[in-house]
Image (tube, rainbow, N blue to C red):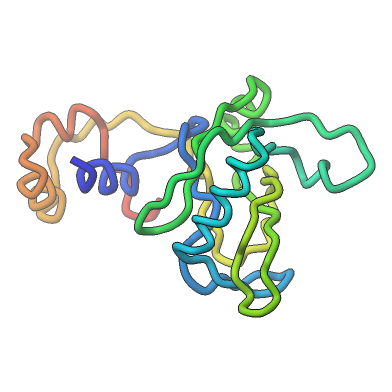
Length: 185
């Protein structure tokens, strides 16, 4: 079932504030502020630090938490989860942040991390910002740039049919739920 969810999440139009967001990809991360490494040990250290502090991690707007200005929260990270393609956070969004994301006024996250000097490995997650200019190169948008469209053509191409068979899902159910966007999205 997890494979099914992964495939759908990569093909569906995501236009709402998701409950889980990828905060950091795993592996070597290229950033405008300096490169670093994210791995299983990074996850363990980040999670331990969050549990030790016993507070939720803030998601702010444009890194306002780091500045001497009012810094309202856009959301709160309640939990960190390690997956095969990154470190994810379970988020409780504010109403205002949901509005911004649904209207695609903010598209990206920018995590503020502490990096261990000896091996350039991430050791703590300080905060995360909603932004349109993330420092991490190739950061994946939280939501797609296009609004969802209604699928009127229920015919699937050969690739879509193969995926339906792999998922043990009927083609009519797949078409009915509008899981396919245009190829260029």
